[in-house]
Length: 122
Image 1 (tube, helix red, strand yellow):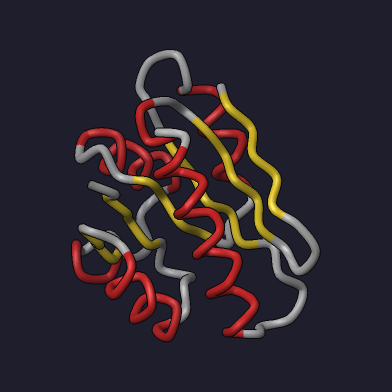
Image 2 (cartoon, rainbow, N blue to C red; image 1 turned 120 degrees about the vertical axis):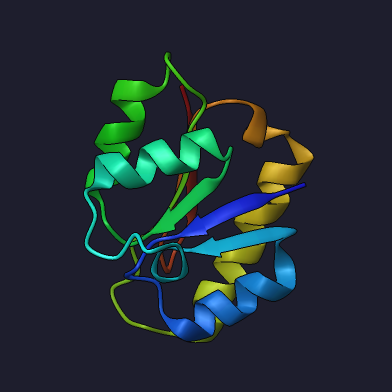
């Protein structure tokens, strides 16, 4: 079961797409986490065993710092332009990678942009 937590900076169209393609989706706004620190969001994600989806590049450093203590996963959207179809295609590829390689059982960062997907395990 792929459990995801969408950060507050994720567009509503992406959230709608994720609702259709993830088993369990939580949205920061719906969990009263709007404006909370990255650390707090990571704590909630870790406790609930959720993968964070965000456009905030500071989360990558947070995952590195906490990789040994708890398993945290991150999908970082680094698109220069908002192209909903490209983002959906990238997320679809990332979700497939997570499921096929059981990445949700370990700490990882997946960075998506217009050109490629990079996966880093911790």
